[in-house]
Structure formats: C-alpha cells, structure tokens
Length: 158
Ligand code: ATP
Ligand code: MG
Image (cartoon, rainbow, N blue to C red; front, side, top):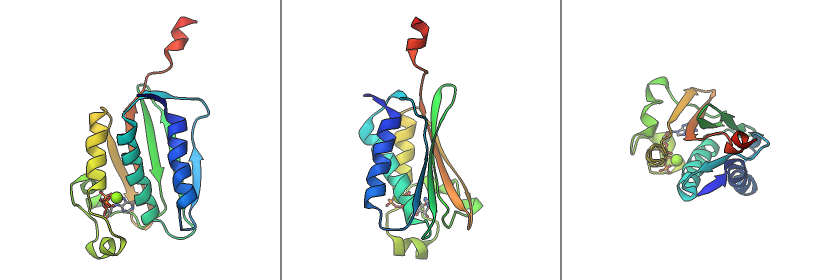
C-alpha cells in the first residue's frame, strides 16, 4: 500500500511510548512533511516492532532511544539508536543470522528466540532495501534500514 511513512512510523513509536515500562526517553528526529512509500505495512510493522523492542530490551534505565528518518536520493534511511550494552565488533554482522544471540547468559534472562532480525532482514530485502547495524560495546547500538523512495512526482507537474 501507498502510505505516509512519517505518520506510520510516529504511530508505531507512540504505541511503544505508551506501553513501555522502563524510564527510557524517546527522541524523534523525523521530517515534518509526509513521505509517501509503497510498502507492506504489516511486514514493516513487524520489522520496526522487533528493532524497537530490542532497543528497549538492551537499554539502561534513564537511557535514550533516538528515531530518525533521513531522505537519501532514492531511499528513506530509518534508524533506531539506543544507549544500551552494545554488541562486540565481531558479532555485529552476525545478529542478522537466524538464532544468533550475542551472549547466551544475558539473552536467556531477557528472552527471545534470536529470529527477529533474521526475519527483519528478509522483509527489508523483499522491499529492495538494506539493513545493517553499527555498535560500540558499552555505548550503544544503532540499527539502520532503507526502503525505496522517490521524491513527490507532483514537483514535475509544476
Ligand atoms: P527475538 O527477536 O526472536 O525475540 P532476539 O531479540 O534475541 O529474539 P534478534 O532480534 O534477532 O533476536 O537479535 C539477535 C541478537 O542481537 C540479540 O539476541 C542480541 O544479542 C543482539 N541485539 C539485537 N539488538 C540489540 C541491541 N539494540 N542492543 C544490543 N544487542 C542487540
Ligand atoms: Mg528481537
């Protein structure tokens, strides 16, 4: 479906902001204008649900989660940044593999199957986008993904 991604993203963030149990501050750096994209909203909701719940799961009390949309030439670049435990350098790429979990002891306590990001990767690839992570241990993690976007065709009619 064609939808306004800014509004869609805001609603998902709202849902997490209303139900979160920790003291984590949400910081939204989103464009004001509507950004129309053609996506499977159920699937991208699932992708964002996993990324945001991971960010909250690994955030410390008092931490901040920052949501961004950057408009690139032919894509929107979405990022979710946390100030959590981070991921060791040699594991950053592996978190998108099925059943991969960084620290067995740590993740056993926090629950999950290790499938969330593998599914996210499949869904983003099906949308012809990309997904990756950047992280520093003890500092935090940022998950980025892109989805195709073409600037409003309306401009061409002026
Ligand atoms: P599931 O999503 O299936 O419930 P999960 O959250 O453990 O389980 P993924 O979402 O695929 O699985 O994440 C894989 C692993 O990557 C996690 O177990 C965790 O070790 C690491 N990880 C993911 N996001 C973060 C993050 N924001 N900060 C630190 N580690 C993370
Ligand atoms: Mg997860």
